[in-house]
Length: 111
Image (cartoon, rainbow, N blue to C red; front, side, top):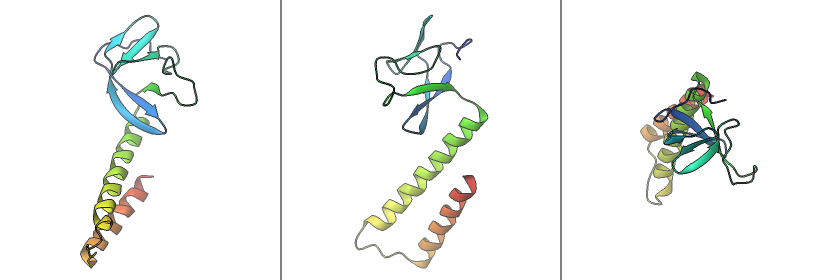
């Protein structure tokens, strides 16, 4: 899986269906270490953790890059919705509501 990888390269860390870009700190014959966490170089799975809760790393492809961008976009929308609707005294005006609908439609287009 990781044949020509070196220190400083970026990979995608997948944990609980969430993709995060991480930098490789160290590479050995059998392991890749990122943020102090060792991963199996052949499979990409985190070492020392059972498979059900482990993370894994994969090379960044255009499809994975698009998924990371979509997830960032959805997190921004989620944060905006939380800020608008979490304040009890906050009145949602028509302008804000129209803006939120626009962001939600953009998120649906990216899916």
